Length: 295
Image 1 (tube, rainbow, N blue to C red):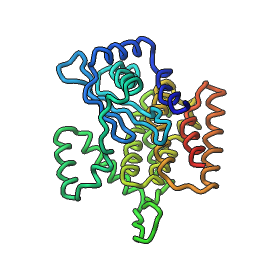
Image 2 (image 1 turned 90 degrees about the vertical axis):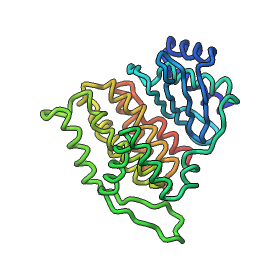
Image 3 (image 1 turned 135 degrees about the vertical axis):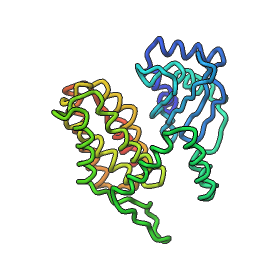
Image 4 (image 1 turned 180 degrees about the vertical axis):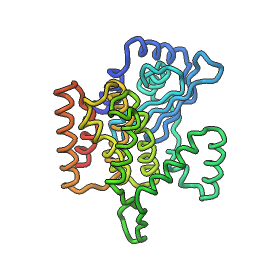
């Protein structure tokens, strides 16, 4: 029962008109090629253009299968929750058997050798400039610290030794670039997106500890200096759509001892209490829940 409730929790985040449009799209069969790849849903949704829109939904692990993040390449920019995303989730929620089960991307990549992966990446870069940006971000993530390669006998995952002072300086510099006179400005999330890409690159490479460290470094100035931003709405959306899912994924993948879990839980709970009191926000609820599940 709890799993079903968690699976349907996304409905509360969607505007009623958007949800109704999504249900209409789902009923008309406009959701095509719905694929479930482990903790990821992919689908094509026919819309107003000749080419279908592409929707990606990131899911939590375990039995709950709750929605963690959503993306669609349609032009709707009022929220990440567009009617195409809603349509995909309506089908997934109400008709789960419609989703074709397929291997997770990580499993597919594990079957390929380095030459095959390199060829795929270069081919993808020809299609999307984002791939080049991701490669550069991954290289920059390596430049933050030195990769320590474990011995074969080690059971711990490989980690990047993060230079925290250097990382904080980079983030401060990025935030100050929004407005040279202050940190104010609704474009702050855009300035922090490259750091999210670095963290995702670390996570994809199996270094959840580095991803968690970078995610926390991004979250810290936003949580501690939230009042300094005029674009509170954009910052709140950035927390919900980018920072929180990253922290959840990192927490679920990283090895933490009891003291580390307690320290994170205390810090995130304190930030949530302050932000809820002042702004009615609790951006660390999902990361804290992920910590509790690990405990």
